[in-house]
Image 1 (tube, rainbow, N blue to C red):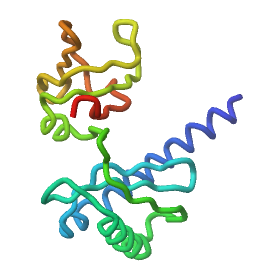
Image 2 (tube, rainbow, N blue to C red; image 1 turned 180 degrees about the horizontal axis):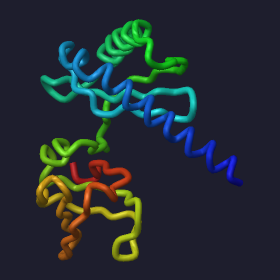
Image 3 (cartoon, rainbow, N blue to C red; image 1 turned 90 degrees about the vertical axis):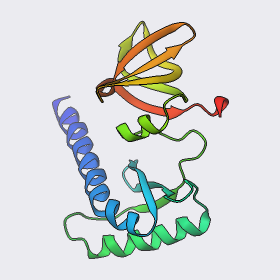
Length: 166
């Protein structure tokens, strides 16, 4: 059992390192092309998802995806710090856009979101509601019906815009 735990922990670190490395490689060059990098995520062990949007209008079409894919592939070939042996997927955030960075939450104040938590709050691991405030860049205030919840960023596993309220 210890070997399995070690492998799982090692794999998780490797995935996190890959995501962070790719983020660092792409963020500024992608901006110079007119795009905002939203998320870099390893899906399984051999697929890398890059989620982006145009800086000008927050959209992304198939031509943009092709442009980013080709651009990223060239950057990865030049990079020697990591083995880039995976399939590349470039996509838009879609209508249930993930909120990743604090600026994402700030830009979507007043929006309805679905949140998955790393730990249980009020007997819930999932919660939905309206973002009404940011607390010192440490937590969000979420209003659900007539209740208000203070949710620290460090316990948010995943947060997406709720497409039912767009």
